[in-house]
Length: 545
Ligand code: PEP
Ligand code: MG
Image (cartoon, rainbow, N blue to C red):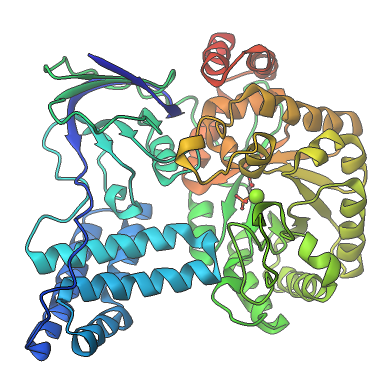
């Protein structure tokens, strides 16, 4: 047995035969130069169409989120601008069709990155579509998950949304990836399906003679075997039935909310039973724009997202541009270290008009939609900044204003911070990256970005205590809130609302409803006292028994 370990992102144990997710195709060469341009270019359209048809067929066999993901990927394959740019490259540079598709897709990915790196998943989607079309042109098997015929442990470098959209949880015993981190697509998916998963496992794919694996999603241990081992299915931890009103079994109220970034996500969030929205990322409205969208455009876009939540609470985050979400028309200065640069609310200090126009649009969209809207600023570092934002929100006629706690200084000054606002919400994704000085997008640093790190939990405790002492709500809207086990620790630390990817809502709501408030407090104490994330998980589990 080869024993490895990684970062656990979804709990439970399983064992069984392994199936490898096909590796990406080698880069297609740009030679030999094509002679018959017309014939070569004519192969591209039908290949893209075949890929789209295959994805639409898969979409027809499933429902809900899986259907939406497959249909979105199929629509991207059908996008005529990708095919026509590739055809143009065949004609202009005599490139073979697979190479032309590669280069055309890269141009699209590059412009997406330039307008908004935040849409990293869209870049991943473009690469996915590109690889499928290239495989079709080459007549080889597309990269991705092969059709499973028996319960299996999936081993992959990383997973794309379309790879996993129609995964059958009865056939997938566990997911293990060599890359990816606590906020990766694999992590989110595994949690929503209740499949044990470990990510960032170094050396996972090195030995091709491995035929079976044992996975412990609670400790991060992965054992690889060259001999078959007995199949063990994960125990489904469904928790209590989710009734739609968040709280512990003894009636301590905790709002279970969703994170959304577009109208379709808001509709999904309602269908999953979210009580409201704890984080509406408004960047989507700006990302595709080369100039600031005017108030009317913003108003219409926000209204669409807010409408499904008429009569319910929605926290709208003002523009979080910069670093992983750069905007061409705002982040103009060259910065040696953009993550520590003029990003989030900092942009508004020198350019308050952008914030004021956005607040005006949000206030109008609140009226149009009937949602109970609050606003929240990202990347706030001091209580003074928080006060400045609150005043501007009030001046725009928005009655409730809060800030995100993503910068360690804000957590350390929690008391003064919460007193300057109506509520705070902890962004554990950024808080982890700043407190550990570890880029949240780097798989190599995934362990430091594990939200179970006791040092991170101690900062959350400071904020939770400030909230409890002052009676002001403290939410968590980073990925940490989507982990049903960690959610209970967060409640024990004083958190009064949890906001997460919509698919995690029932699991987190159900898990919380299965524990008492006292158990959550004991779990929090145990996790805080642990020396590392895996011991924190184990101690929490014990405290909840
Ligand atoms: C966070 O940082 O935890 C957060 C929720 O914000 P984002 O992921 O959009 O940076
Ligand atoms: Mg953030």
